[in-house]
Length: 334
Image (cartoon, rainbow, N blue to C red):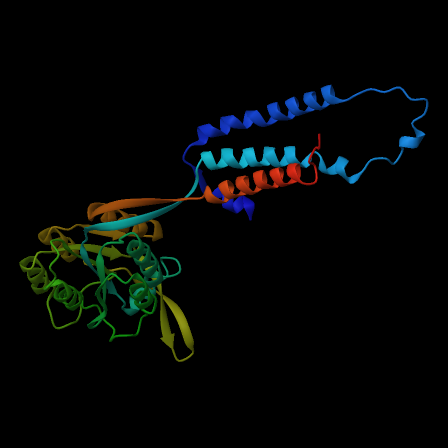
């Protein structure tokens, strides 16, 4: 307990600890004085003095001990022990970001660990943790689109919704245009100067009510920057297929409309990325995190609380005890 207390203590005037050298000097002086005060007598036998020590012999050093302890407490009080409390105020201009995530059946392909969808969710969760001042929303899409979480600064709610995302929540397909349009609609009335969508998909547009080019033009009209991510390895990937006899894995060709995704990103001021494994996907989100910087100002308020009062009180009590002993039990009469 004492060690934990000391770990949180700071001394405003540590130079006073140099006075601690007085303590051994006083001990040396007291020993010298006691030796000089002793008298010598010659006796024929000391047997009669055995057991002649009284309780005063044991009490006599106490006033000096109390004085040393009082001096040590005074020195500690002069060094001004303090506890420190730091408070950080974070202010800044954040960015409104919508994560637009493909949840089609092909996102269960296992060319990523453990599969594309879980890999995308894990990296998105880390991205959320690195954006403390931004409002972030979550849109999912497959054959249709849906807003899982509107723009919020509540990281717990957002990550809870992200964790609950799974394939099969929506009609299957890949409606890139609908997903992008829903993300833009989330940002349309945002007062933020910077509005960003990170759209991740592993396929080609094959459904939905809104054409991807139309959604792109809407994004341009409201000043939304779109980063697009094509997710999938080169060639073929194992995809789970539900059959009457159970789940089997079937090799399917990875088809990503890179031309469309590049066009959407370029014309809205963003970039297109291709993620072929977990590491490259993580690096992509890290790069987007670096490109889209929020303006953050951190103000640290440091408050100190004085802790010298107990030492000053202890010194006063020890000096009082010394005086009481000297004027009562150890009082010398002429």
